[in-house]
Figure 1: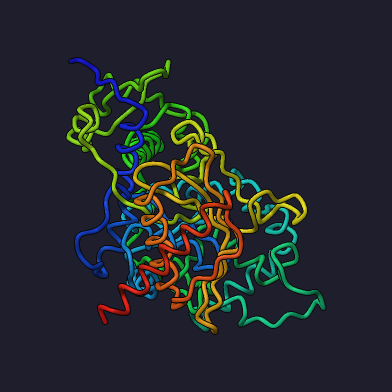
Figure 2 (figure 1 turned 90 degrees about the vertical axis):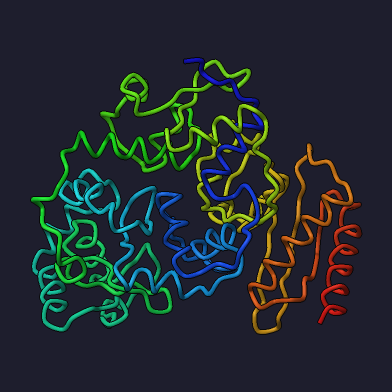
Length: 414
């Protein structure tokens, strides 16, 4: 069988198709689409920063368009999802629980996510937290009063919060629900009553399944990209072995010396990509924690987009802004947006919008960016878009004119 050779743009299109970002949706989102989108990505990374929408909501919006944010919490409370350390802290389809159970049973291998010292030295306190939940039911960290006189923050969690997180990493506690995005902890046997460890798959099966899931989620994957997707540790399964078994397909990207791997479920997409008929038409805004950009190396190699989240960088050393959002336009990452939603005032502030040097500005390009920006602002209930700074500067008036024109059309239609 001849192994297909893809252009770089075709590889990008295949990746975006697998991620649900190739073309705009043709119908309004329904509640089951939330779970389906997470299954397509494999996981949905969690982050709590919300200068715009919190990341998991934004990742879903990029794929689903306008949808009610509570649908995500409803899927968690219904037991369709669970939370655990996957790529990082993530929502994961519940049917994949067994793939992560080995991590819970070996928590000391989880690095900073688990403290053996805390478990040993504070065993009585940990047991007291567990007993509290067993007796009183689902519990939030805020249900425990702080008594050590310290302020909050992840670097100085109160003792009960540390104990909750240790118990979460060991799998003794799970997240039963979220209220105002706060975790509600409960006993694992109450959250997932039908699980017992007799169902635990062999570790070899887990390694295989995670490779296949990672490759499927990425559409096409170079070998070194695979382990990052679910943060798998050595020993790792060589994808060449899966090609020899027929469990993966192999293709090539022009000017790359190593192969890319493709899941058989994407065979038709691969054929379309190789034929040059897989056309990306979606323009949208991405979260910094979107799977498309969370691996800096992959984003650079696949899209030529050197992306780093700067919210953890001192303000005077930031190049683009606190929480910059990548701009995806018709198969290319063409810029980055630093924005803030002022919900009380109904204003979506564009602090900075910077185009990539290779971006080719045209009337259609400008309309695409303006449309994505206005949709994002409206979803935040911030219909007024205020632009502060744009680079190159000449793009600013063009973008504003496109936003004004779109607003006038909407007003006339209503």
